[in-house]
Amino acid sequence: MSSLSDPAAGPHQPHHFDLQSASEVPDSYAWPTLHGQPSASEPMPVIDLADRDAAGSIGRACMSWGAFQVTGHRIAPRLLDAIEAETRRLFLLPIQQKLKAASSPDDRSGYGPIPLSAFCDKLMWSEGFTISGSPVDHARKLWPHDHDKFCDAIEEYKKEMKALSGWLIGLILLSLGLKFEDVAWAAPVGNLPPDLTGTLRLNSYPPCPEPDKAMGMLAHTDSSLLTILYQSGTTGLQVLRDEDQSSPARWVTVPLLPESLIVLVGDLLHILSNGQLKTALHRVVVDRIQHRVSVAYFFGPPGNVKVSPIEKLVGPGRAPAYRGVTWAEYLGIRMKLFDKALASLKEQEESKEVCDE
Image (cartoon, rainbow, N blue to C red; front, side, top):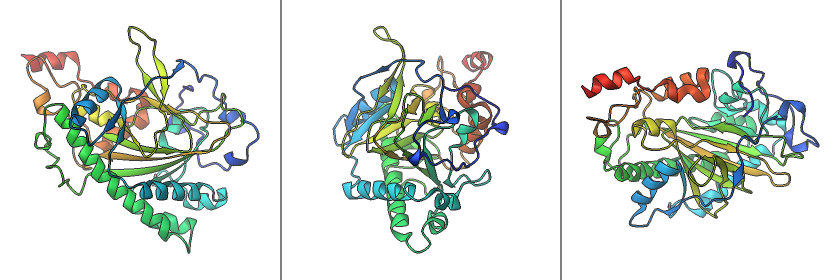
């Protein structure tokens, strides 16, 4: 990971460098330390949601990996093709056209870098487009007379992702011996509260002339409850596996599996599970030839809800590991502390001893 810098002094305003026409990696994109841990080939759990033991398989994957791939998710291949096509159409626009829908410090929706890029002294070899609410206003800036197909694909995809997120959360709770009713702000399966939050992020990783120098996305965990990722074109997503008895810590490349989706445990789900479920540290590397795109759906709780360890997962000998926090509060903490944000919410040992008495 590149060294961290003060976000208030970060150089990462929307920039005009066209990655797709680059013949070399400029110094501002050259990361000096990309290989702190080795890369390895290792099979990631693949879970068919139609399997009878899907909940158990998901629970084991969340505890050991913090990530897994799913099939049998009921998302139509037609929709996956449509969202990929519209994502590619967006990023193939001239850069001056994309900048018409640029994000801002007051509104993260639109075209621009991820907020966490402010912590890096190097730029990432990627472009992004964030959609928090309706896509219409930003889409009109990109295609004044031809935005309907883009908006229709986005809205349908968001609807399907929200339903799938609820299904996955239900299976994850079941793997912990819980039900939706054990989470005060949730609801029975199939009747999710309308104010559950979902944000979509479209990502583009153009071919890179010197992939060993550049980074597509810095190593990070997601702030969400969970993230559902669709990747297409080529591999690039890597998940960090912890050191174990047989191997050192290593980056594992997530393979391409047609029509599958990748699920990543976020920091808020780690908190909700009282630390039982592993939050997935992941990054993206780039390719010399292939143009990779991905679509990430970040699923979170209602905006006014403080996420804290579920009551049934705490008790004698199992004190709450984290204090409660809303998603917005946690995002604010991350913008100050980045990868130290989750640790800052840990309950102190003194508090645990009081709870145990």
